[in-house]
Image 1 (cartoon, rainbow, N blue to C red):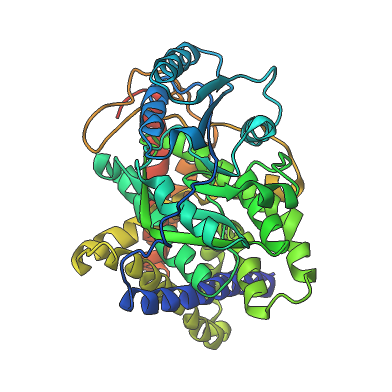
Image 2: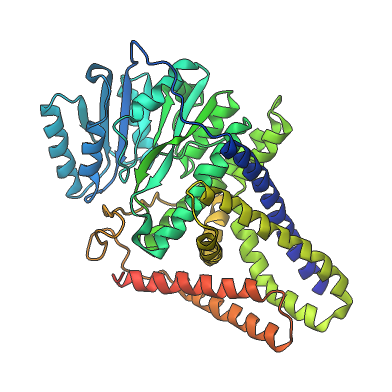
Length: 488
């Protein structure tokens, strides 16, 4: 039994290390790109701009729907070439707000329509497909409800699609209007910035598969059709369509220099629902597309390798949770079975993964000119909170692999900007604690016991790991309970 525990623990750490090495290659590519960074060069201005549709899929967005419609109506593009679709699946007061705002801009000469389907089949994917059937554009830009697009968004993105007929998507970088609202939003920005700098640029620079992020990007409609259209058999329809399109040979372009401001979830239960959707959807997409990637002929090995780890990235949460749960039995074996000392000494090589991740995230913070001291404060906190979410996310991953279907749960938005605004007392907030929170509290106690066990036996190797785990699970549980009571 001891040997089985050691082998399973080692396999979990091996996957985390392999994942870290793949991330290292992206970080090195990004570092080279960062050194040779130059201003965005947009292809020559077009004499005749193509027809474009902007789709705004919304569902009960009482606090941000007007802001979204106003921002999109202000986009600078030839009026006779632009149409805006407000794809509204809502069933509350936000519908009337959207209807009135659409009527206002229509009166100003904007080609905008409020569209409601007879049913909500397929959730967001279904809404996008429904709108596409009647869209007149050659290209389609998509913005979620919490985004505030740059007025020059289309003029910065459409020229790339016109200059290269093999280009299926142009994706832009997410920015955050409320990054400094709280520690929770700062930790989210810390993680997302790494994806929208190191990962997206690293993969795109090397010609590997990247993903459309569901919003703040522009599709060539011919690409959507060729890839099989929007499908709703996963809850991350954006990642699914991205892989189907790239497997068909379409190219994607990522523009780090073009920012699209958006709002981060400010309450823990809203963040959990978003994380659940993303991790479960990624697992569903892995089941659906991983075999296609492996079997695809003519695809370079390096691209296949990066695609495999890209699709399997949510599996890391299972590895983190599994390694965490086994760390106490491992600690007991280390204390009581000196015969395994050499094996445990060799296992220290897995600490390299931690250093790689530090370098990976440091590169994204360097892009923002963040000080090393500030980074050293944020990085352990970010890892701790990520570990604290591993139980919640692992359940999502298992459900995704098993094919269990669940409804699309939207992330509430409250029009928060930096220190302004509040989500307390507003609709959509989850004011009921999830029973899983109790398990998170028990895990906090479990890892505190691990700290006590290690210190009392002068075994300090796992102490930092148990410290981060106990803090992470404690923080996630505490904030879940606090926010479920409507307290910031």
